[in-house]
Amino acid sequence: KTHARRIVRLRERGLSEAAIARIHAPIGLPIGAASPAEIAVAIIAEITASLRQETPAEYSVQTTSESPTATRAVERAAAGAAS
Image (cartoon, rainbow, N blue to C red; front, side, top):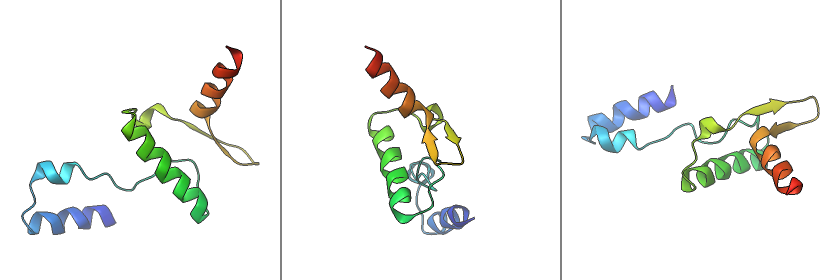
């Protein structure tokens, strides 16, 4: 809802559709973050993925009763340990 209202305001101020299309919101990979520190990690993870040109859709999340785990990160760590 907030992003939709933001888009309306930006259009009213004359921003181009191309400029508006560059905005990504809400930000942060869906890792089940709850605390401010976890939210910061989710945001930095998405920024890093963007810089590495990997799409957030390549990531999946498994939530356990213990804590959320980014499956892809675990798979990469396991692959690195196996080599």
